[in-house]
Length: 255
Image (cartoon, rainbow, N blue to C red; front, side):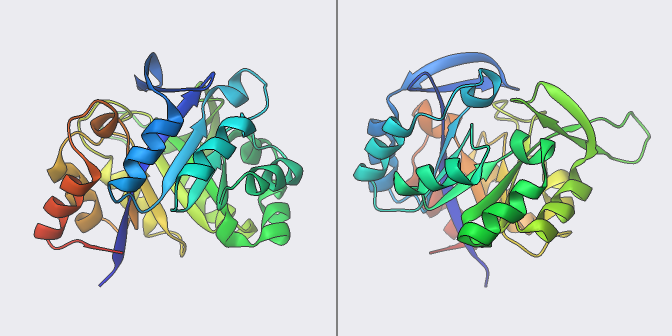
């Protein structure tokens, strides 16, 4: 039986954890170090730290905050946002990251994925795909990959991009549905499954978790290896322990 993971996601801007809906209406929800400690103690399998302002505002990832978070947790830590070079990756790993996530930088220069994989191995390279449905009613479903915090449509097919990224060296894919992000209306199961069935590496479902049932659903009904959770945890609607207990009752196995 496939072993699944629950990964709390800390979207950080200016040193604070924030959350919005469909990448808009950003609200402050807390201190990244305190939330990281809380989620680690509660049984999270990994933690994702995404500096959402780094690319859009053209500033370096906040490595000082990363060091503080890494010092307080005992689980794998993925760092994303503002990672543009192998040197950036090296600094993130030196600060305590287990892997790095890239999105806009890989879209603008796909060869970066190969360079990172050559330097640290594919397991340390995650590609984040911010995908939005662009097909109209009655048309064949199509999602494009967006860059710069979901603001820029690259015109690149998200599924084809996932396949190419794995060929270049990405060892994991995070599929974030812009349409579902922060809505708590459920993950985009079709998008998640399309990508998970197209690649041979682990896939993380992201965007839309609103109920325990929805989290169990994406882990049971798609080939996703993990579910990213943010709003439900940040706003105190549930805990990692409750998520795992419910999902295990439905037949999901965790580490």
